[in-house]
Amino acid sequence: MTDADADGSRDENDPSTRNDLEWTDPNTFTSALERADTREKGHYFEDFAEGDVIQHDPGLRLTRWGNELWTSQTLNHDPAYWRADVARDRGFDEPPIHPDYLLAATLGCTVEDLSEKGGYFLGRTNVRFPADVVAPGTDLRVESEVLTTKGSNSRPDYGIVTWATRGYDAGTGKTLCAYERTNMIPRRERLETDGSGAEADGGGRPSDTERPASALPETFVTPAGDAFEDFEAALETAENRDAVVAYRHERGRTMDDVTVATLPLATLNTAKQHHNTDAMADAPSGGIVAYGDVTRSTALGHARSDERTHREVGFEDERFHAFVTPGDTVYCFTRVLETSRETTTVNERAGTVRFQHVAFNQRDEPVYSGIRTAEILTRDD
Image 1 (tube, one colour):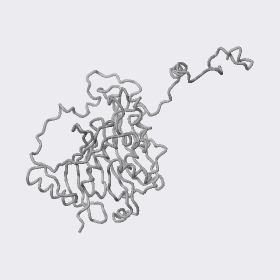
Image 2 (spheres, rainbow, N blue to C red):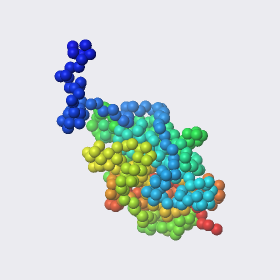
Image 3 (tube, rainbow, N blue to C red):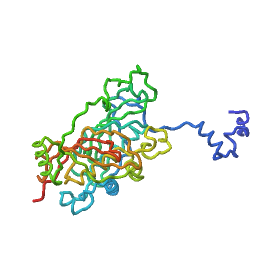
Image 4 (tube, one colour):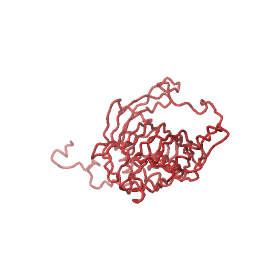
């Protein structure tokens, strides 16, 4: 306190107490920004410890509006998720929440706590949907457990964290969605390395030059239709001809303002990568990028347009291979891996198919891949 303050008066020479200070004067405001501390969002790698359990607030109400926004913009046009009459024919009381929207909303609710600092989304696996039907109006709550943390010599400014995440119904406690996700997370302090460039645990995925080249089958078999029997027959044909069941889907979707910014923000995904052009100006991508689950869901929408999907069972080994930026177009390529007559469906009008899907851009570069298990309806009698 100055002498002038001792009797309650103010020091007119102290700029912090002057009434005539113009805070929006460009020079004054620039100086103010330089002095001000930033209240940061998100967490650094050092903030995570194995076994920690994080409750993600505030959660999200899964609405029909959000469901239809997501499914329409990613070209997931199964009418059971839109029309009440088709939903009833499928055994639902009303159009339910689509699993892609549920998965994206579950991950979106975790971003502020887990990955808002940035870093690469390395992959996700063990994706499961234990609930057959999720109704609009369900209050989604989400929790995550830190499974592993490890360093990276190849990227000493980052660490690698894997979480197990569960989305559940706040009213009943029933699990609606679960998965394991791995991200690179920025460090608060750079890791001192031995300079070898190897991963700290000796792991890490091999580069393309390290992967052995393999000869493709000469013949690709395309299923004759979109029912379970068509996938089953195609695999039998491929086995007899030493071929592979593999095909591409005609539709593409160009990433625009809605898919890049609106959809992530509608799921509470606050990552600056999807909406803050200023913050991303010097990023390796050169600017904002699409949310991985938008890319994924768009590719799956293309695939589902060529099949009679009844129910999503789960996903394994999901990977994101390259940035998708505004103006990029997402296409999809599919392999059929196996079929089974065993299902969890109650109406016995479906079989189980295991697919590999690869999303790619207009330059034919893979941007996403994953193994998907789904129940596919048989032909109508």
